[in-house]
Image (cartoon, rainbow, N blue to C red):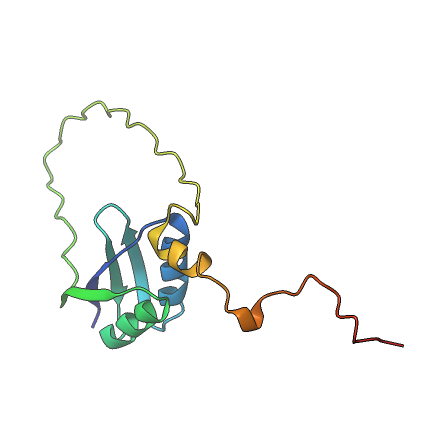
Length: 132
């Protein structure tokens, strides 16, 4: 039986969103995935195990809180009465966000960490070392 799993996840940029979608979409039994960046929710519909969905989300480095797990909403019923067609309002198109690791809180923690001294590159040639 299909069910809907809704998780509260911090989706701070487009890169984070793609990472989440890629991780969850590989699960068996997933029919539909919706990631709402504004609300910070990840909604997965299908026969996939909710535990596996949560674990895959957490493996991407995101903290996931369960909002709800239950049956998917029923499709809206269509009435037989003819309805007047309303003129569609033009919605302003959203511009694609450019990912910048310096402004993304999640990526900033990863990219801007200082390198340990043992891994620091050595720019001076070592005069005691020679290669023949």
